[in-house]
Each structure stands twice: as structure tokens, then as C-alpha cells.
Length: 298
Image 1: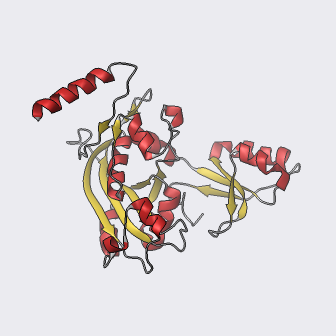
Image 2: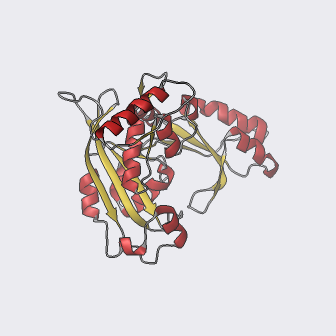
Image 3: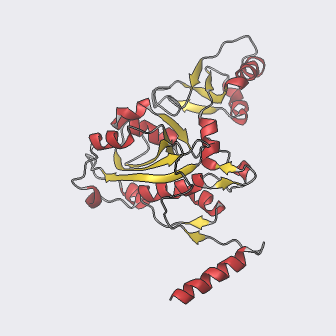
């Protein structure tokens, strides 16, 4: 069997050398990514939740997974230091479509509770929380565990321009394929282990890790500009510009809005004045950082 594996590995290496083939290797989880002896490190956490639905104010968490890791002064990932994984039984049966999507059944979560003290102890020393859909995960996490309101967050799905860096998209499967890997596990903790492989990998032409690119973006201040009461017939113009619609269901304004870097604020206000409102207006503006971005508190 050992010789068969060696032969398969040699065949894979041979195919990988040809531009006519792309070889994907099964992800084998590891704990160390870069030398760290004698270097100062900071602590980060990858977080993923599975829930009974998409309503961040009413649906329930049924699984929480976290991977704790150290990262170096150059923002490269050094090693995984701990993992956390727990089910949580919701007050009502898990919807069938959620079980089909996640593989989590009522029997699996029966009698399980996520210990809030254990969550706080695990995450207390984290400098940054990373989620692959922070707009979703952060709102659930803050609702259950207020500790996460006091943490900086980054979104690995939206705060890296994956397509510009040569990937087919931001879905985890696309990102893994982009670094030559695949995985078939669907538990939240498995997705966290897959994501850390992606973030630890160097991005082609950038000479630095995806995690370093993510932190650079997360550290910037951004502003959210609201186009309140904008003319209905200009909605396509706003959408083409990058504005998104908030229906007000989550407590935010019912309006179009856009998030831009602070440096782009004057240009965006000028666009609203000259293209949308055709008059001198001062739109509602909210300043955001990693401390409140993706939170219901914005």
C-alpha cells in the first residue's frame, strides 16, 4: 500500500507539472504553518456558526466552532493553538432544509448547550475574530455572547478581492481549489480548518499571505453612506455603483447604502449630490472600524 501511495503521489506531481492538468490534493489538517520560535505573536480566532435560519435576531445557533491560532509580526499565521466545537439544542426542532444543508439533526444536538463561560475563556485573549461571512456570524455571536462586541472582526469572504488575486470566487471550495486542495467534510470545525489553510497560503504576485492582506483591509476605517429617500427610478444607478439595499428588517434604515474607504467619502457624496439628488445634500454617514463593522450596532 505504501508503494501505491508513492506511485500516486509521483503521478500527481507529474500531472501538476503540465499546464493541461490541475491537481487537487485532499486537505490533511495540520497545526503549524510558519516558524515562530522566539518571535512575538498575537492571537486570532476563526469562527463559524451553524444556525436554524438566516434571521440573526430570531433564529438559533445549533453549532459553534472556533480555531485559535498565533500570528506573527508580519501577519503570517504561525500555528493553531486550540480548537472549540460544541452543539446547541434549539427550543424548536431543526428545520428539514437546515438539516439537509448542514447535516445536523435534532438527535445530534439533543441535550447539548454551549457553555458561555467556556466561550469567554476560549476567546478572551483574541485580538481578531475572522469569519467567512462576518455579516452573518458576528450578529449571531454578539447576540449569544457579548464578549464578541468588544472584539475586532474581519470577513475573509468580502474583505479580500479573491477574483482579483486569481481565484474563481470567494466560496470556500473555490479558495481551497485555488491553492490545490479539496475537502469533503461539512462540520463547522472542518470549515475553520480549511479556511486557515487558505489564509496561511501566500497569494500569487503578492509575496505575502492571504491573512496579511485581510488584516490590512480590516484595519482601515470605512464609512457607510446612506442614500435615504433616493428616487426610485435611480435604484439601478445606485446598484451599479455598488450600493446595497437595506429593507429595515434587522433594525437598520430602510434605504440604499454603500461602504467606502474614508478617502473616497468626498467623491461618493459628490456622486449623490450631482447624480442622485441633484442638489446639495448631507447624507447620513456612519464611521466603521473592525470593532463595529458587520455588527448590528451599526
